[in-house]
Length: 145
Image 1: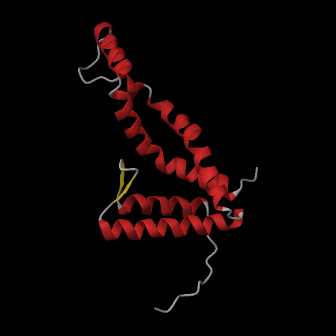
Image 2: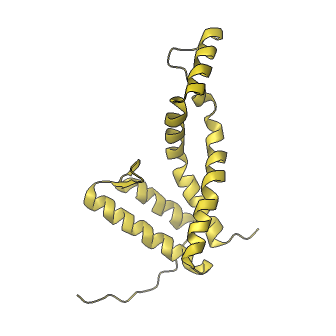
Image 3: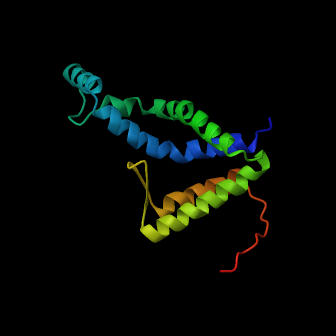
């Protein structure tokens, strides 16, 4: 099966976000009243440790949930940019290089006032992009300043 660059890019972003999604989802769900009640019920009837959380048992659901929630958002956002499919790898790499530079300058990049990324996070993204969405290097004009 042949995949478009948009499909590959989306898959890379979902894979890159997966470890963060586990942390975010467990934090958000772990603090909810229904989950707290479920934890208490399990602790009452089963021999579990005091720090047991049902969220940890259900984390295998995070990746499919992430895919369902994030894929359409990414695909719609990139589609609105009006990029031809063959330009997506170059755009993705330029964006990633910009994020790496920003993280290097500031020490971290914060998105949505919630998610903090370090330079190595974006370097991991660059690595995934390089393996899955290779860019044909073309020389760009350098503006003289």
